[in-house]
Image (cartoon, rainbow, N blue to C red; front, top):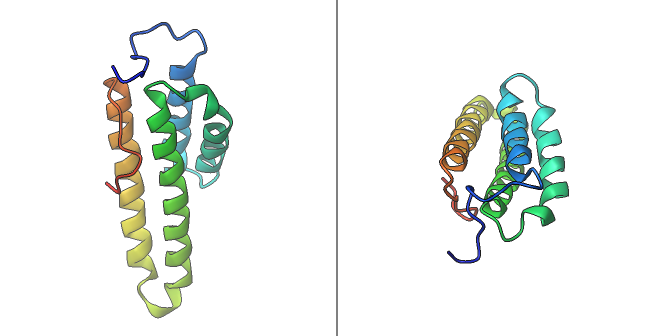
Length: 119
C-alpha cells in the first residue's frame, strides 16, 4: 500500500473535505481570478496535514497547477502587444481546466495523481 492511507479510511481530520474545497476553489476560477489564490493558500496551509495520505499528491498537483498557470497567464498578458497573448491565454486556460477536472476525477475515484507530470 506504500504507506498511503486509502480514501475508504475514516476521515477524522476532514482531509477529503478540504480537498473538495480546494478543487472547488480552483474550479471557480472561471468566475473569478481570486478563488484559485484562496485555493493555493488553503493547499499550503493543509499540505503538512496531508502527508502520508492519498491527498498528498493532489495537494502538490494543485500547487503546481496554480504556479504554472500563474506564470502562463503572466506570459500571456505580457505578450498581448505582439499578438500571441490571446493564444497563450487560451492555451493556458484549457490546460488549467484540464488539470483541475482530471485531478478531481482521479480524486473522486480514490486514485492518486502524478504531481510531476505536465498533463
